[in-house]
Amino acid sequence: MSAEDTRKVAQLLDGERFGFLTTTTPEGKLTSRPMTLQEVEFDGDLWFFAERGADWVTHIAASPEVNVGVGSGGTWVSLTGHALVVNDPAKKKELWNAGVEAWLPQGPEDPSVILVKVDADSAEYWDAPGGRLATAFSFAKAKVTGQRIDSGENEKVDL
Image (tube, rainbow, N blue to C red; front, side, top):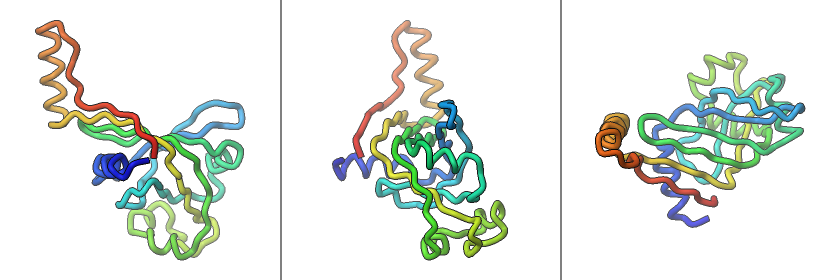
């Protein structure tokens, strides 16, 4: 992973608050759920709060390979990596905020509250500068000219 690749992914994730975390069930089916990203600075890891008893948390023990999809407007990031359940009281307190408390009112000290750390191996991103309006314009232009849409930058990077 180059520092430049990590910076680009971090730049695209900056300001994003939600993502879809995809796990694999014991039966081999993919399943996703919306999650709130808990750390602003991306260094190759993503952090999420969860309840220890959630069904999907058991998926991680059986199959730690996960995907996290994040995006809005004209920017989309798909990260693949390995998830790990973490019960670190100091890290829970560091990341705790009012938004988490709304979902987990029992507080960070409660043993039912855990963290899920995703150690990202790779990412693919699509970045269409200008957001939705620019993408809509590119779509209309492609339709009129009969040429492929200019959807911006698309890269795959190892992290």
